[in-house]
Amino acid sequence: MSFKVLLKLVVFLATLFIFLYIGALNKQPADFNFPILLDKKLTTDAWEIYFGMFAVGVFAGAVLMLGGGKGRSAPKSDK
Image (cartoon, rainbow, N blue to C red; front, top):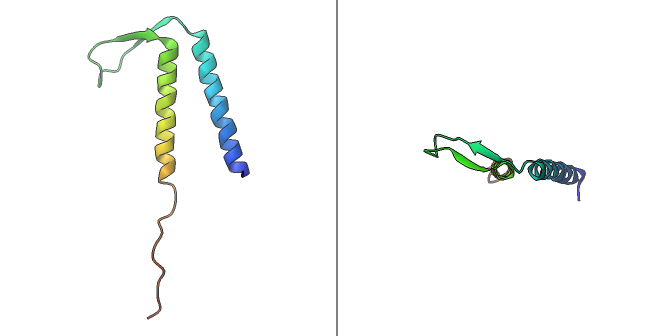
């Protein structure tokens, strides 16, 4: 396992711990207002909003990481 992969794993787990820790301490109801998708205000526990935002961030990061490599091209022939 390379150092880069290990560092990414440690950062990911630390971020996950922070979000779970915040969620464990915030059990009071919270209002979530997102007018583009929801017509009304959604009231839910704060930990659900934190976890949802974390999940969206992880998904967006995964999508961005998929297209990071150089495209392969066919080798050029000298004919």
